[in-house]
Image 1 (tube, one colour):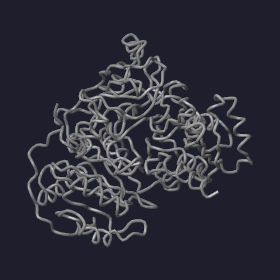
Image 2 (spheres, one colour):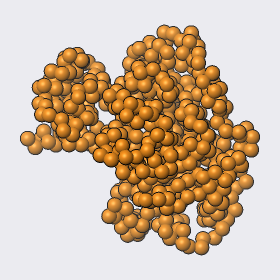
Image 3 (cartoon, one colour):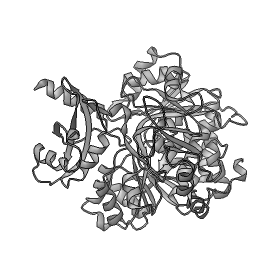
Image 4 (cartoon, one colour):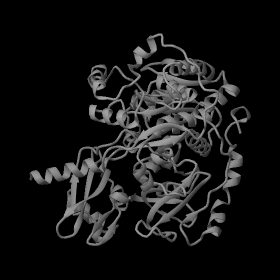
Length: 559
């Protein structure tokens, strides 16, 4: 089905009718084995990223599409038609410099130019290479070399770094590159105009997303247009927002959470994307009120910033309907507080870059158990199974194993890395996620942790997520991250890094251990409890356990 035939996302009513008996159907199909066949809901579309905007222009051209806020008002805004006009011009500028299939690196902040370049690159048949603007010289060199990028558009300066000077020093060390320019110079110069291809294959690479690289050099996950577009479609449908809702995004655009989940999800809804440069509680409160925001992503630290803001009750937040959280364990008391104090629906999501950013999602109105202790069930057209990571045999329902998925959303490959691709993706299309989970009787998935984070103490498998959930139940604990460190006797022992709530009373490590002994088995109680002022977070909100582990080991060695 082409964009001209598209009439919007599947209606919420149809979605709910089709979903109503999903648990019974799936339980009949595989009541004992941890396997879910693909659920058929809605229609897969064979679109490129540019087709999402093209379809929105066809039926909603005069609607507001994109807002860049300032501290007090709108700095700039575009309707869908105005945005398409800007995208068409930008695509011709790109086509004048690059051939279809070449790779364009973008190292920009959450500015509207990111949005325009994403759609323009799609029209021009280019693959975008998503780069954190805070990347170091070493990180930039690796990404630009490994991706064989033909061009780079970057910030002039970022967080005190003169990026123009940095790139001038790096260019001699890189293979020949057609374009390396700041966004300001790109916008000002009269570049030659070219002709875009008449069609772009929806299976072609749309973007390369570099993984965090916690165990080595980052790998470039190649995501197809079709994968990104349909992931956004099915995520957007599950929010059940009325057409034209306002979406407030602070997730970085170089991450799938920004450039797929938020941007394409909002445009699939024919909504308005209000694009924050970064999360600021004061600005977020004003934007929710002034722009009548209905949807917003969050992580616990940001939610606390909103809920505990001294002026929160001065703002009208009644438009807010959905708050989405994922990427890190969400304590149940946070969910309860969010829903009660903000009168919104909490939606949990579980994602991975290699699955175009999103895998599972809960529904508005799900039970307390499903909202607080699961990550929902897989998107349509996605098979899921839980395997024993050593034998690759199917687990039973309720058993812990590695989550494996087969779907339209699975990455094409790791760019120029067949060995890594083969290790993650089977010949018949199954992605080994590296995440440990449990499939419940009704098909919902519960996350236990990362396979690489599993702690083996004296031959016993310990899953950090269980301990983190137990710690989160303590009224004085704000955040916790659990990891293993080497031990001569046990092989590994458990360490818990704990951040206390502001204003919480004194709490020593033995009191916290006693609290845990009533909730988890004694061998899972952390040997070391390390009180910290903050947990290191990646830009998408995930705790960087490798950084915590390194810091703990350095401190222990120093002492």
